[in-house]
Image 1 (cartoon, helix red, strand yellow):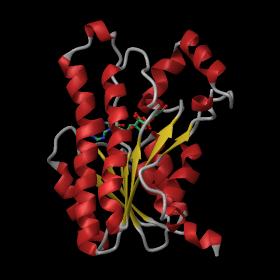
Image 2 (tube, rainbow, N blue to C red; image 1 turned 60 degrees about the vertical axis):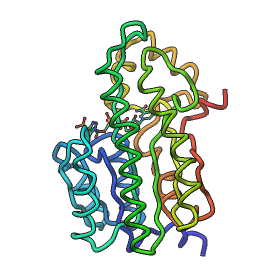
Image 3 (spheres, helix red, strand yellow; image 1 turned 180 degrees about the vertical axis):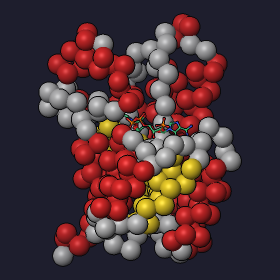
Image 4 (cartoon, rainbow, N blue to C red; image 1 turned 120 degrees about the vertical axis):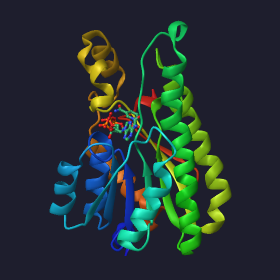
Length: 253
Ligand code: NAP
């Protein structure tokens, strides 16, 4: 029946940036839908592990700093060694660096574009190779942003990389749909996590942002739950290359 299509029982989901924020929220949602979870993070994921296990799923942490290409092979290898297969990848880890465009440095550009764009693409590629070898199909969900659609202010490398995530999601979907691999994205709006702490602590910007959100509140990691489970499940098998906004109406204005 229809709700069975949303079940992730027997599936293994890899989530990057699993220790906090939206990544942690999505780990919990995937576990609640029945998936075992591999959390990739450079810090301990004790809290996420506890939340996943409380929901009856198994949790494996892979400790990795995603600021080089090195961990890509390790992530797929350890997942498959531990659970026997991999079915879902959520590319969530990402960073933002704020500075005026006129003063923006090469480091601020390279570090952000590396993790948000390059690492995301090559981890998708490694996951797709695994899905093709398994002959199982698979689900890839890339975390985009409002700045996949808009220019933003003082975050040029973030805008560039998140715009690329939207385009790459389409490009990969076009090539891999034939293998029953669904590549889709989620574009969160303004969510209350570490990523937006500076904005929320700036009274002027906080007020400005809240007044433009039709829902009149910041989003939460729990707000990602429905979208990630949908895109990870059989319920979205014919959805390909699309990025779904979870934004309290921001883009509709
Ligand atoms: P967050 O709390 O800052 O989480 C980012 C995650 O990425 C953290 O787990 C962080 O680990 C991890 N990460 C960053 N650099 C890493 C590295 N070199 N190696 C390993 N892990 C690394 O922010 P968030 O809001 O949950 O962000 C999650 C995703 O949503 C990001 O892609 C972000 O761009 C996107 N997003 C967020 C919003 C928002 O309003 N919050 C809006 C649109 C899109 P550490 O804790 O160790 O830093």
